[in-house]
Length: 239
Length: 167
Image 1 (cartoon, rainbow over the protein chains, first blue to last red):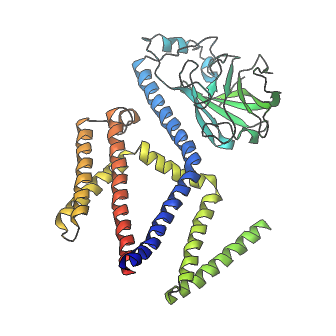
Image 2 (image 1 turned 90 degrees about the horizontal axis):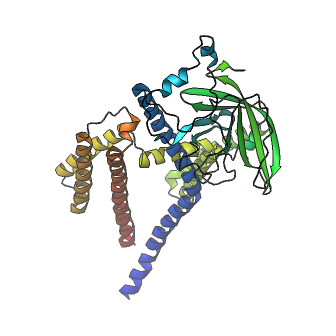
Image 3 (image 1 turned 180 degrees about the horizontal axis):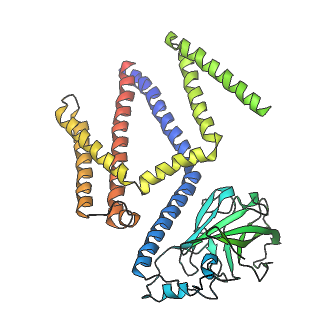
């Protein structure tokens, strides 16, 4: 008889405990995706800060090295008048050091509150499964008339860095930080292409360009290409 | 129009809460339950108000778990030492709680000693968030969290069992 009473007493206590547990599990499940997204953002931010510090340390030591630099460098507009165009050559003349940075710089788009790292072309993290992907044919921002081509997922996954690109319009601005300089680009064209595995990039060969590619919102068959042209370096008008 | 509806809803909500607050002393379980639900709804609305509210909360959690700042680290160290002294001199604490406090506090202090031996530049991200120093920081922040979870679980367990005996 006593045992029966005890079982009856325990039941509400256990259901209360179980209820609490279920609430915690439900909150955890609801927040999991968002948590992973934020985690990725924080990791990217810290990686970028570490890279920045490593870069500054190397700059002090004179060991800065761009691993796969090619093409003609853009002269800084405010430096070109003083004929110091071989500034980059001076930088590279130090003892070359193996590159150990994860990102070459970072991409910021103020309108959609995006800030993410841009991996080096030869980085093991250069994959859409890690975030932003720098396409192999890309030139780095300091290459005159070059084209930096970046791709990333849209959608709701934690690695969907370009999920809000659809909100952008012609005239909106994106910045790329690279080698201690900020390259500002303006959107000049947005067009859609079918998902066939290849994309034709329509851009002026006389302009330095940033191209962003992602899947079109609410479409499984199309991709959107954003063409941005360089208009300023470190806030000083270019070209 | 939307703004007006928003303000009207806010006023209704405030009136509803005031009615509940003034009736709290009546010991009605329904009023207490409704009050608790309203608070939960309010928190949920606050989180839904803007993605950035939830994101900044989650960002704080991620930073605490993976990249705790040096300030957080020092607060935890001093907090642990405080709890350690409290456990030594407070005779009302149960032996289980004391043992748990001693174990976690000494764990945190040992990690702190290792951290001190590293002689780091605490203003630099590179020295703080690479190698052994990062492991130390994570050990301390997660250890402290585990400590709180263990103590809270014991507290909950006692609360639930006391409910049982009261019946």
